[in-house]
Image 1 (cartoon, rainbow, N blue to C red):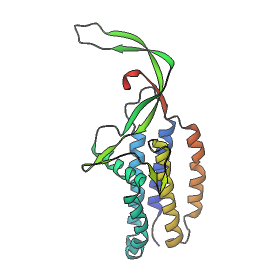
Image 2 (image 1 turned 60 degrees about the vertical axis):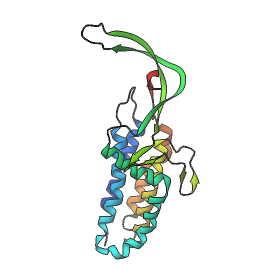
Image 3 (image 1 turned 180 degrees about the horizontal axis):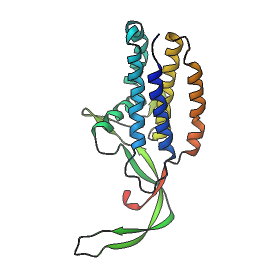
Image 4 (image 1 turned 90 degrees about the horizontal axis):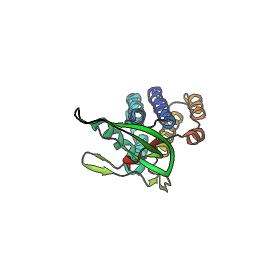
Amino acid sequence: MPNISRGFEELKIAAKKLKDFSKSDVTYPGSYPDWDDFLIHLELCWKKTEIGFKDIRNKFQPYQGIYTKKRKEDELLSYLYHSRNYVEHNIHLPLTETIIDEKTVIYTKCVFYNSPVEKDKELIVPLFKAKLKLNAIQDIGIYYNPPKFYLGKILNNGNDPIDVGLRGISFYFNFLNDIDKKFNNNSLSPHLVEFWRQLNINEILKINSNNFLTTKHLE
């Protein structure tokens, strides 16, 4: 019997990393390891599942080809795949910090450090509500823009990493669920159902605090 469990474990890790990313509450984020880890483990879900079917590769590959085609042709799935390559081979951030409300939330003290012969400057600056948005990324010389479509449907939030990430989780969940039914006698079904229940997409969207406070200089 093929082994789907390793691929499923990677999907669970990817989902946890996306949840952690959605809950992050920082004033000035400089890096986003949870987003990077999400992309990496999402791709590992695919690779580990493929390895788990090596003993029946000839039977599995034609069916897997349906999903392989979608991964290559769909804007969202392709963007996630190439974003994973991007974060592994680049030091630049795949996300942009954008101010979404010009109303001052609070004021904070900032110290600007100068050279040893100059006096440091201390200023009180306003902080504004900001949000992370997906960047166009480059992989093997080709640029990939944040998706506008997913499986033939228009996306309203194609530059929102949480929205895009959740759709990626959903795609690979359906992939595992389908091959579990076809090749594995639904042996993983109870665990998949429980995973989906605990994922609780509505809760993630509700508590998504992918907003933070920042100064004007990021604009």
